[in-house]
Length: 310
Ligand SMILES: [Zn+2]
Image 1 (cartoon, helix red, strand yellow):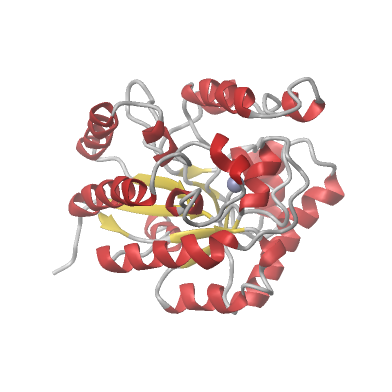
Image 2 (cartoon, protein in one colour; image 1 turned 180 degrees about the vertical axis):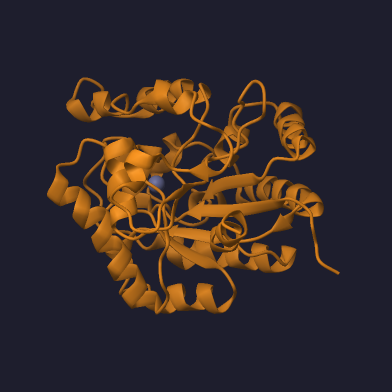
């Protein structure tokens, strides 16, 4: 029998430890493969346990070195999307040539390494505007998953700023460079990107926003769990499920990383959730994904896109 329930997508950003730290203004760490070796196998095991597919947004800088992992993910039924070439921040203010390398270049590189077409993009720190979305469409992507339509993002930026070093520097101020107000009131359900954005893309671009609750637009986003009481977050998940809207739930590979046991750079302690033991973090993620999977058909964005366009 066909499962007619509304869909849910579980997506994971594979930000490496060095890229996370770079977001806090710490730029001295060479490319670090900790998440690929420790967190990703745990994530794959968890998704396998729940019998659901996931979408992994990959930093293409590491594509060749991690080609076996990319191919393993695709063989297991997961989807690989681009999380840019090098995860620069702020993303929206990059010059045209750099933006093209990050968007078009990462797509080609991930496709070559994974042996599979890459049709989805998520910008570093969700930092997109019409110009960036136009570039994403022109590069041949079919969807973007970078819009986070919640006013809470403003508070989250403030909190990231507090945890960052060099607050007086440009890098510190860059945390506020994105169009937070524009995001806050963007449509909160999957939709065709604007005609202006799609003018440059041959096949058009669909936007899959990160999920928020219907009225208050509270984020149903994993990192939010580290800041609010569990009951409040669970209530948001239930409200979203009851609303009948699609669920696009986002988390990060670092959500299954243990600061001490995995011998992670201790400066990562400033990152949300990094002071919690792995078992607690694993339970938080598993419980939420399981709660969503009980009520929804979990698919990849690629699959959801085909449905949306039918
Ligand atoms: Zn990222």
